[in-house]
Length: 56
Image 1 (cartoon, rainbow, N blue to C red):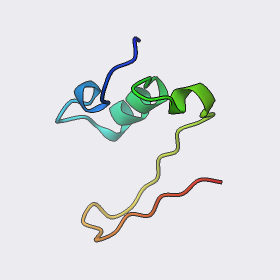
Image 2 (image 1 turned 90 degrees about the horizontal axis):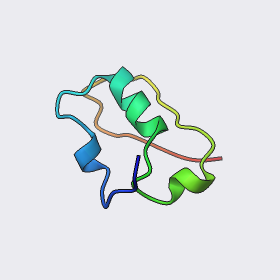
Image 3 (image 1 turned 45 degrees about the vertical axis):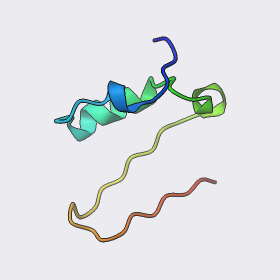
């Protein structure tokens, strides 16, 4: 897949979590794909007021 200017065009409006995992794993929209080693998905309440993300 060739690099794009934004990942938004790669994500269907009705994408399932499994589709998002696949899209994220093959995304080249930014330089993170050059050094990133994995994508991580979690589970939680769909109506959560906050989302925290981090890296180790």
